[in-house]
Image (cartoon, rainbow, N blue to C red):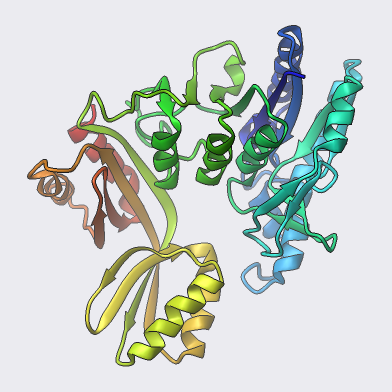
Length: 396
């Protein structure tokens, strides 16, 4: 059985016209001899009523709400989309079935808000496909062994799609979005961003890890392990138009240009801690790890530690710090910008990056680097300007 998994993000499902492309792409896949499995996200972005953030805004205080209740609430967005898409297909005479993540066989661990897929039972999906029924699967969610609904975190629908692609041994996973593919920068932020037509798993994993928003890094990992190619495509242009192909190609994006892309991660909070007790430091890092709190851009000094976290995990981090009676401060509204390229052994790169930013009045609060990346932390209000400055100076 030749299977294609087609995933549609929030801006690809929020109008009837865009949802019509789902039907068109599914029928084209069938004409090509493929069995489509469709994964959908919640409709649109806030303030659209069924977007994830709009659902969270219904709560009296989202930051204090039960994690279980938040997962139960936000899972509704994807379920609504599955039913709407399914009924639109049925209205066109197409046999389709709407499924929650759990009904699609996706089993997760018990970590509310950031759960991980531990197993996928494909029996139900394969039975539907054998009957020529198109499964419409709610992305972003799964079910625990105890029958609880849990969500996979931001970008979870990408993870759903590639995890299903891997479990079903699909020929291809198609990720539909509102841009043409993987770009040298976010085209919503940088007008002159260019399309990267082909890229290998390792490079896209790194781009995704550093903030390329069209695909989640955990999604890339599923596809890479199972060697399932991914196509990043523009919803409005359809499956037969140019996009970005992600596969095992040998060539990497750093082979031609010293700098290849500029990415950003929004919603960062900077944590600054003054330490006088090294034992508390060990306990803190151990507790953060056990709570699956990802820390980044860590700068370690004898008397203080500075790092960044996802703003959505701030409440948990504050509780850990307060429980340990640490002297700490958490500041919000930062963006981490990363320049990708061949950095090793090339002198003057950091000076060029910092100089370009400072000459435009953009302050750098932290920095970090590796052989292929240099990251800077800037005020979120200056993020768009910083992205354009770096893209124009290093990539354009």
